[in-house]
Image (cartoon, rainbow, N blue to C red; front, side, top):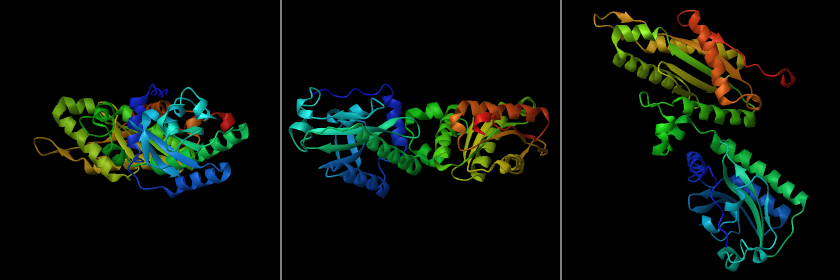
Length: 356
């Protein structure tokens, strides 16, 4: 028996799978519908949607598979996620990789297998859609195209149901080791890397749902003077207050993170283009009204931010990376800072003319 090799990105793939919440969710009727359709088309004895989780193969949906999971090291689907194309075994009893596999020599007595990899919104292959029989079988190019089409249906369902999780849900499911990579220690909000990961996720969701995203970069006005006048410890408390005020004023799906010493980023899925600048001014209002501060003499100190904004249409992922979009918003912020306090500048993404 030849055990499937682990993908090169296995650690990141596993974390991404765990962050989706799909392993602990209840049975999904839409995924069950896909496996039923696959069985009707192929007439296969066993059809399954599997997830490769640590040392097990977990069946999120299955027809006639005798158990809910099997060891990963004997799985056929473990081989599927190492490639992009359909994985086919016409007769496992004559295949040197599988002839002595327990799934072949015992229940469920696999002979033929065809599976396609399933990719999640983060770009990781998390499992497979497969059809299995206890007799040898050939699969035509048309058969494999149909299986790939059903796989795309399963990927879309998974992305819509498990890719659009709230920031708090993702935060709660983070592996402790990933906190250091994605979380800002001062504010306990997302850091620059975390915001890039979230924007990447939201760009995929926007394409699938044909929705949009408002992207903002904002920074404390004259932060150097604040540090000089009141000290870094005081300014750190102001930074924490801004993070809390903005986070609590937004919707569950909106994302806020501290991306540099005195600057933040904010993502607002579903924002209309004509709303973008207005919501930038609302960020200014939130900080000014909720982040009140007085000096040692009891005099109020005005805390304000300036904002750079941009807006991503549904097809933005075809033309821009998450990094490029955040940098575009940063360029708008740099212009806003030149205009004075509480300035908001909007820069449209330069969508190529042929895509307009």
